[in-house]
Length: 456
Image (cartoon, rainbow, N blue to C red):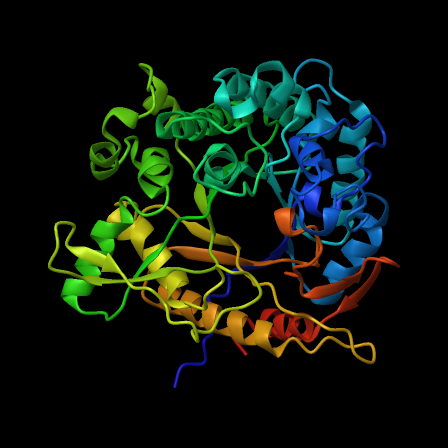
């Protein structure tokens, strides 16, 4: 029987994002992000919640690092807030914002924790939305690259693991598309499918220019990754027919064909281009070369998947609806499909033809209906979810796929975007009235996984 032991050099970590935990939205020179504006608009976020305070990490980062030490992680993924660094989106750098991250990074170093920094996790400056419509304009990619240069030239002596952008689909298609109703992200609704794909194309350009900027500005040798929430097709049965159907479906499922395909292969998926027809985004000469920058590893955010099987239809496959009683956790889309983690990694190696590319699971976790009872949160449902996904991760690693690490989402409960504070993804419970941090049962379980370097 398998002990689910991981390789000795396997990376274990935990992840957060700036807007979801920092708070201090108007302090030390920070100006509004699009998420400040969105969450302040009545009806956009559940219960009218905003990220103005969040977990108050801006003031409590030292105790949060003590929490990381208690957990035993040696790797911490976080994001840097663009409107804290360049409040107007372009132009003058706010050194007070830089100083906050210097303090955070110095304390992480003292604690023996390696920082993994995401340069953009959705909180773009509102000033650029007002100026030219954010990701509707190619200007956004150039301004992003300038922001990256400002950050890396100032913090690059403290960070050697960089990620350009987090989940392009979520801040482009989920914000700008008229098909997303109600919208679950900021963005002026555009009228055509082509315009929606244009926003994600501009984000891909930002990734490519960001890769170049990191390597040009870093004062030390560093690695660069892209983080994507690949939409994962999972074979209903692992038969040759269903596996082949699953790989075919992968090309046009979600935004795979127009995000991860160009980023990793240098071209949009032909199947997607055929599907879009006249709605293909404008691709200027040199764009695909810029987008297809060499990266050192891929960050893979994974929560669920869709069961797929071979079918006698024009596509050759069909997606299988889940019955009402199918197990899911505390999000409407969070069906428990643990094989998605294994198949996502396998798709990168086989369907995308990149077996050379190391993969780190940069987010995996779930929202659960956590309740604090007698000072404890017994989130056995979260442990079940994480255990099954880590077993799928172990399968990928044991079969030789290049999985190098795993970061749980999230270190703590936080502002869950359009769901506000109603949905809790953390392994640490946040009492938002007091900002008390209370480790959940999953915290102790994950700590034991780290200690033994295996699934327990």
